[in-house]
Length: 304
Image (tube, rainbow, N blue to C red; front, side, top):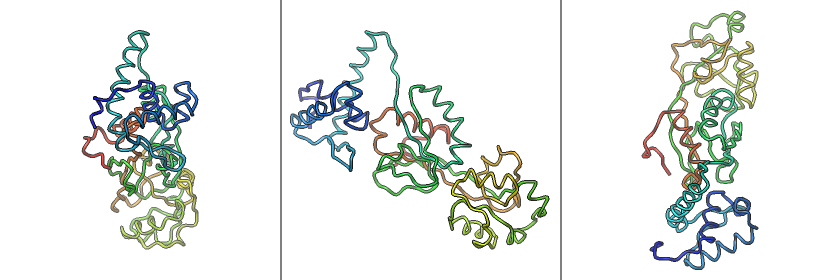
């Protein structure tokens, strides 16, 4: 369809653009100072005049259609032009504001994200960040978070995923534990040791055994769903733990044991939903996270 050949009602266009950028009719209505029914009628009128469907309802939310995405490039240019006129008239600078929810493990939330959030606050002080600290996989499609940092590649086709990099993890203990139990010199020395578990993930046991250990669930006498709690148990000498090397290197009172064992590879995936294409604040945070975690990556490494 030739969008440029169609005459738009700017109020209808503005209602469409606000709904895309705010993520819901209610938020768009609040941003524009209108009632939600009025905004809904404007979008319906725009759909009628164009003869296309711009949004589909998914659960309680709205999802932009391919026709809506095609229209978006044109109306966004119109909106930016209108914004430039307004800014020129008022002398104000453009700001990016609003909430972005980042889902990450509590270890990441405590040790990795804080310096990145400092940079984000300097770059876009109008953005409000909520860190959803959980080891569970937040469902981005249900808007439990806007961006997720994961160690397993997401398989949902509608998500946008970037492989940021591969980190490494090793086996760590505190000097207190070593003084009490002796310094291990080979993998067999750990077969009767007490390990600190993160949840009940069998992959940890499988991974440790793959590098030469012979562990069972009986080795895991202390378990916590919280990675931060489990790591503190290691730091206080209650057992042995596995941790990302970049976290361990900044943690006092721990040291790597059996450093000649192969390290664990820890893939890092940065994931968001399709709103990355439509929300400037989510795009800004997503790009800043990717840059901070890995350096700039070419656009070809972003996959659908």
